[in-house]
Image (cartoon, rainbow, N blue to C red; front, side):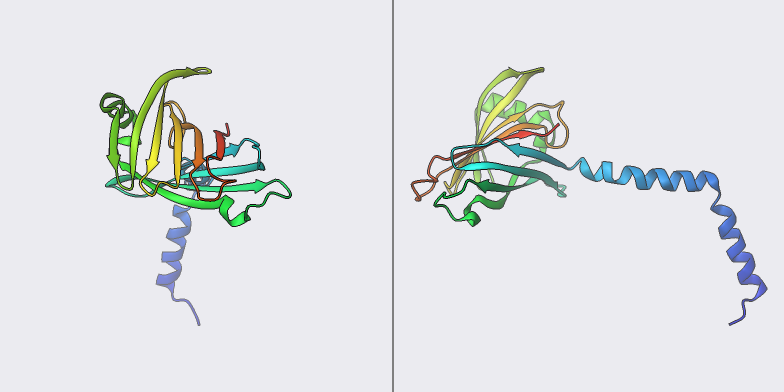
Length: 189
């Protein structure tokens, strides 16, 4: 199919727009895109425990303009000969906080109120304390209404993504080996 003169002129103008400045801007955008996307998630390393060798927890901020929705995925590698099905040591849960928990304002309000009910959970303020170089970090508990776990979280506004330094999950289960079992996860930095 032969190209007419008008099409060739149109194509030439488009190619001229794609100069070196535009090319550099496009390359920078592609290089920065993974960094922008990574800002919505935080990776945690699970410390070894009595029944597990290692594990990981990934916390992702889900897109939502009305709530601060956080998805917590965990995967734990159990030790050999532990009588617990592997499927119980892997899973995810979505926690829905009020929108103000995207910033320190939500944690300050929780500190004042001491207790707060949110969708499918109750929050309880524990204390503020220094953790290493982080001054006055917020310690609080998430108590899901299904009563299958208790989650202790340490928040500091200077940290990336959700601002959580530690996430400790205590399982509440009818299985004796799992009841009261703790997974301690620390932010990878």
